Image (cartoon, helix red, strand yellow):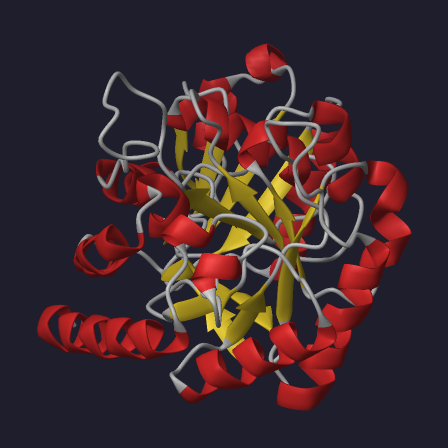
Length: 333
């Protein structure tokens, strides 16, 4: 349920109303928009008398929210959420380029790639330290050492870092990481999501391989319900009957998620297609669809990459992609 307050409502009046609602054992989420203030009521709202609430002098309207996700819902928070990572802003018309290797392999490799992608316009460095792999015999990442090397690359370039967590037991290693990524396989690891909700750090939440958009938003709700509202949604392709690509990139998700939620939405065309030659056109298409950013795999020697070389761009190819995306943005803004 949401209560829309009238323009001119004083902070004292708002606080008095919130105190009354909390006495009904409701959590109250406050959204101060450009035009109105909205109170989102979370809990057993059946005990709330809608007519009484709506009759209050400071209340403009009262509406029930039928969707199971509340805090991620645009009805609760009409304005776009803008997430700040250092000097980088994500969402609300701000476009972000995240780029880097699927997996950190060496100090030389990650620093070389970091410098290259920054020169081509990337403003966040991605790189895998912990790697969930289908085969137990495949390279699992450098883990703690990989995080150390990412932080060295950050020191060299100034780029904020996004990297994936697989288990809450390793959370201490992520203390200096700027954005923690939850991969597709962990999208419904609810214990992990709840723990990440207790920290004040942006979370990049990837859609699961076979999950609906509502399920993605419910996973975001797990994080937000614990107090962390800094969630970035990521469309990375879903599994369908099609075998020509690694996954099927659902670009309609960008518009649907923007309609349903205030959270930023970025797209990962690398994992979606699995083929380097398909990444640039899908990156351009995602940009045209209104994505708030892209996350692109870049490797200085894809043929020798320890992980996902087939979908990785070279630095030169990423530079061309960045120019293409810039032209698309100029055309649609």
